[in-house]
Image (cartoon, rainbow, N blue to C red; front, side, top):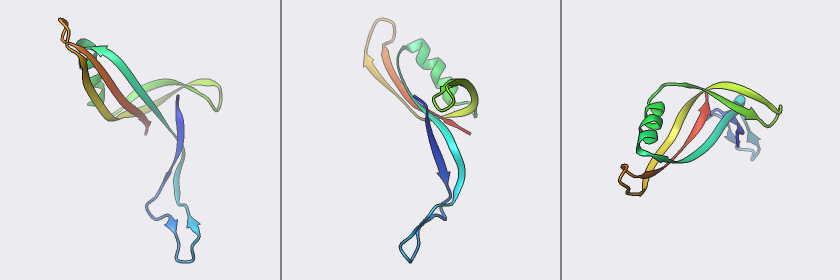
Length: 100
């Protein structure tokens, strides 16, 4: 499920008077956490995607209830061998797609 987050500058935070100041740089940045169980062949394909500067991603926007496309990058890529098989294993791959 796609999530929307605001991006805040480091200059925000709590003031000396105890009030919170937010310096929002961008509203509604999309991030999509994903996880797959894949073969070694698909592990190689997904690993190639993580090395790209950006990729075009189609997703369902739950705020507008419409399909959208955005330029995103892969963040926090993790791969782990689940089971060794005669076909080079079953792997679990997880990462987050984050909008530019």
